[in-house]
Image (cartoon, rainbow, N blue to C red; front, side, top):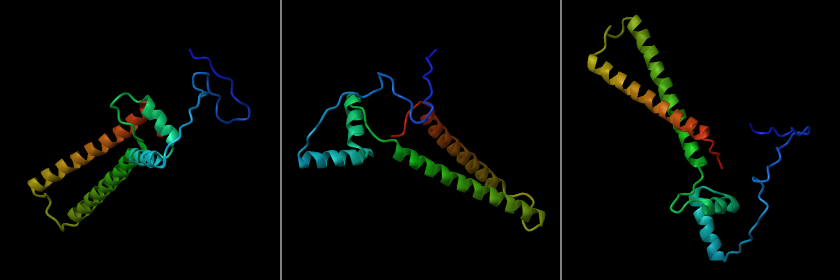
Length: 147
């Protein structure tokens, strides 16, 4: 079992262990051209802090891509919101169809091809929504940290 660290009565961030502390530093100097190239590379990878980007770049294995997952997660969250909006609209259409059917304004039974197509699209939408949710949850379960 891990040894529990005593809690700081004043709160705040817990102290880092000896292996977690960053005691060594390196100072780098760049020409203007080198610095602009570094900034462009950082921007492409989605980073704002040079120290974080350079640390990850140095630690990364050869050929491994260094990127900031925040942009991908934001896109996945937006996609999830859009899928939920579509899902809500489909539910609204269902409610409206039931009302129209009860009022006798539409055929009691819709055309089989239409129902089959509707059912397929609803199933596909549900699968997509579940995949998006799994990707987002899986990212955080692995212990990856957003940068």
